[in-house]
Amino acid sequence: MLIIKAPFSGGCLGANIGCEKAPDAVISQLENCYVSESFNPIRPDVKGLKLNNSNIDESFMVIEEFLSSLDDIPILVGGDHSITFPAFRAFARKHKNHGLLVLDAHPDAVNEFSPPSHEDFLRMLVKDGLVKPEHIVLVGIRNPHKLELDFLKQHNIRTFFMKQCHNLGINELTTIVMENCLKFPSLYLSVDIDVVDPAFAPGTGHPEPGGFSSRELLHMVQRLALMKNLMAMDLVEINPDKDINTITCRLGARIVKELLKPPQ
Image: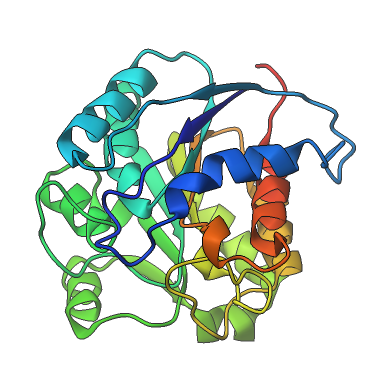
């Protein structure tokens, strides 16, 4: 299985400068995760992309072209959440009737910037027809802008707000999310680290209180990793410059480790 480092902060609108350092920081911590919690000793191949933080179009092209050339199931480690746009665009060209599962504190559907920023990649995926609204599942949302709420309602996007997540409990929530996502022949998973409560993941640009614990997120990730239709993944918005005692980078490494799959 291949891990791709995408050191990019050009889409963060100045809010999370430093997240371009996350791929190296997370991968360095991965060496301390000897096995997954299922005692999976897989050691992945790691490749790095050369991206230009001053040129979002160029960087998106590099990401999309590289992912389009792959046959393996990749894990993309960013970087800000804008990288999901070119990554998913490459994914959508290779997989028909695909779905998108996003774990995030925010819907990322505020503006209509082109190319999209980390605040509007989801809106632009829908606007550009790259994913059907009914094929999107959002989990962990807890600080949406009114424009985002209007967008979610207008497009009837399945959204699990954090209050609902808490009331369901992590086991039942994960079961329901998986039932929704198993309807899609192929699934792309995007994990924004701010879906986790900042008490457990302080190293990010938009910390939002009241999120998942690290244990809860790992429970969900471990079960999602068992899904045979999970074909591509990314982890975004970790910022080593804002981290405390590498807590967030270590959690990021653990998330990656739990998502690793043996060769098909």
